[in-house]
Length: 224
Image (cartoon, rainbow, N blue to C red; front, top):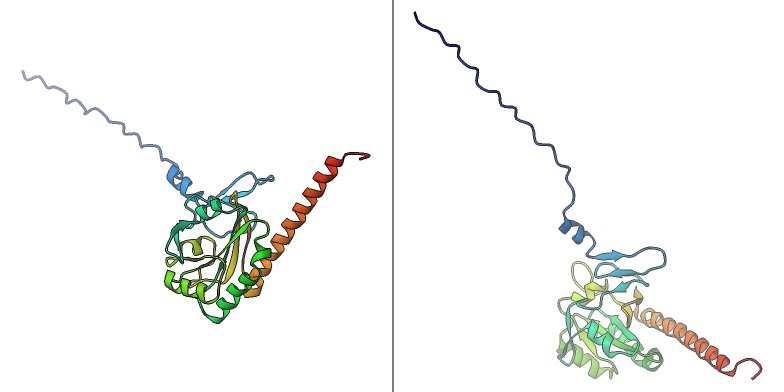
């Protein structure tokens, strides 16, 4: 007699679907998102800006800002080095092309107002994409008392928001203090760029006079 065996059913396999993951931004993406502009608490603190569009009151990171540039004498330098060497900060007036009529007017206005504009310790420089040779000829011909900075790659010109698209330089002025605070950044005509700096210096002169007067009165004391 033949014994019939029951065929065993194959064991069932329960495959569980992997839970779907919510997409979250990577750490690198978060870092890049805040690389250009790091905003601190809006309650009274300043904005720290490493690149992008600047405005008066922002604070820039001077280290590496705008890359390397060259003076009309051929010396390699950076904005950070220029600020370090200055007493109060740096004034950069930007111009499209050396020795052209508008740029000559602008440079000569800064030349003629050099003494009052540097009264509070700011150092003045012209900034363009011209070659050292072109800027040296410009400086010598117009007897300019300040150095002209050469930025053929427009790295610094672009960093301060004065680069014209697709190429070229916007006429304007940029002023930065010793701590990296942007005191002024404005496009404008030859006379307007000088006026921006003049108003800034006049305001600082007023503050210095008030501070000096307060010191004198404090030293006198009551009834003296």
